[in-house]
Each structure stands twice: as structure tokens, then as C-alpha cells.
Length: 329
Image (tube, rainbow, N blue to C red; front, side, top):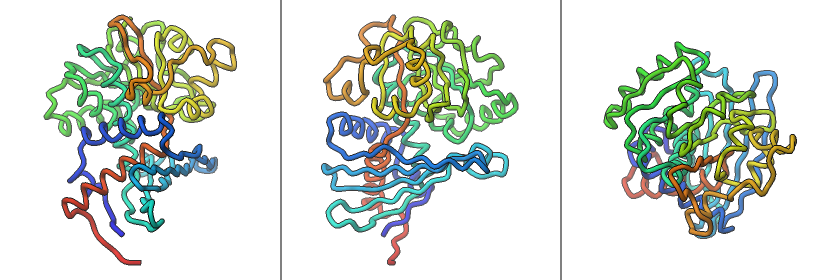
């Protein structure tokens, strides 16, 4: 059994690798070539947290696995990851555990990468300005993914905690210096989005984080953070005005994400307003962006196949490069 830490993964797997792995996983999922039960969520109200269990199986790579991930926003206050997790990878042929890896970094990587995949496929090729809402544990990979797939001049960072936004910006300026993109903190999210080509939200908000009427024609929006029926980062105005809406998993989004459950319950939108899944665009089954004036929207709640395929590709690279620690149980 191979043990892979965050640093081990970093040695062998880049954001570019993760984006390609997520595209592979999305295509597999939308073609029905995986078994991915809806995740099980357990609320832990005493500590304002949740634990989530996400299993998956992909016959094509002979792999199965489960990621156990928790979401505890207040962990930031005690210096711990807000999303602690482990990924357990099994050999699909024998059922034996082949690897246990840092699921926190895997989650950050693949969640950033799925947004990167969507942005790469749906955003205008000439996009230059982006806005990121949220500076929690998922934010660094979300920022890198946007910069990775588009030659951006500027990314504006907004957080309700202004000092946290400033600290995040200073940290990211160093860590992402190789991209030569201007990263700044802003105090007004609505003002920031008016001329933005790409908007990404990665918060735990239960109220919309910006005014959808201000989103310009041709913009691409990624909704990352809302993963329960009561969470809502995107308002009904944006949902209604978007020309094309795509999901990582239609079943998952419509069962779990308040961004869509709330406006559907109000009768503002219906099933006919959605194009389909991003994996269908990747496979050529449906079309993506068709004009520079379209507003495109991508919503993800996460699916186990993203973790599984990414973990498997990490494991492959780790074995090839002799990275990690082997143990016997």
C-alpha cells in the first residue's frame, strides 16, 4: 500500500495534469461508464460541520475508491484545514487497497481543476479579467486553475473578511508569481464583476454573493461553493439570464445545490433551461459556447469519479517516479 502526502502529490502532479484528469472523469461520468452513488452527507451541528462520503468505480481503469471529506469552516480559526480529507484507492480487479493519499489536497486540486476544465471549455478565449469570491481552503486552486487556462491580466479577490482577502492576495502573489497575473483584493464584489470575463464563487454562503444583473454579456460564471439545498451563491437573476447552463452532474446539482433548488421551487427556472453536463460537451454530444456574447454558467457539487480518476492518475505517476511511502498491513 502506497501512502502519498500532499508534498508527494505536488512532486508528480500539476494543475494542468489535474485539469486533464477531470476532463477524462467528466466524460466517463456523462457516458455512463462509472458507478457513482450520490454522496452521503452527515451534519455535525455541534461544530457547524459536515462529513461527506463519496465512493466511485470506473471499470475502464480498473479502480474503485472512496473519499472521506469534512467541511468545517471554523477550522481556519484554529490553524487547521477547513476541508480535511483522505482518499482510499482500491484495485478494481482484487479489491485490495493500493493507496491512501492526502484527500484535502486532492479535493483542492480536483475541485480547482473541474472549474479549470469548465473555464477552459466555456469561457471566451480572449478573457482577461476574472473575479474570485472566497479565500478559504479551496480558493488557491480555484485561482490557479483560472490563471492556468486563460492568459489573464488581472484577478480580483473578494471576501467578506477584508483582511483575509489582503492576506490571501499577498500569499498568492508569491505562490503564483510564475503566471505574471496581477492579483488584487477588492472591497466591492458587485463593482468588481461589472467588466469581468470570468467569475468564480467558492464560499459557504447561504445568500447570493453578487448581483447577477451586473454580469456582462460574454461572461462565464463558475458556481463552486453551494453544495446543500440551503446554500446559495448565485442569485435567480443570473440563473435566469444565463444563455447556457452546464453541470458536472445534473442529478447531483438538482438534488443538492440551493443555487438551483431554490429558483426551481419558486418556478423561476425548470429543467428545460439547462444544456446538460460538461462531460457531454467534452464528448461532443452537446455544444458549448457558440458566441462571444453568451453568458455561460457552470455549477459543480462534486462527484466521486473526479476524485477517483484524479487519484488513480496521481498513483500512476507516483509509482512511475518512485514517490511515496510503501507500507504493509
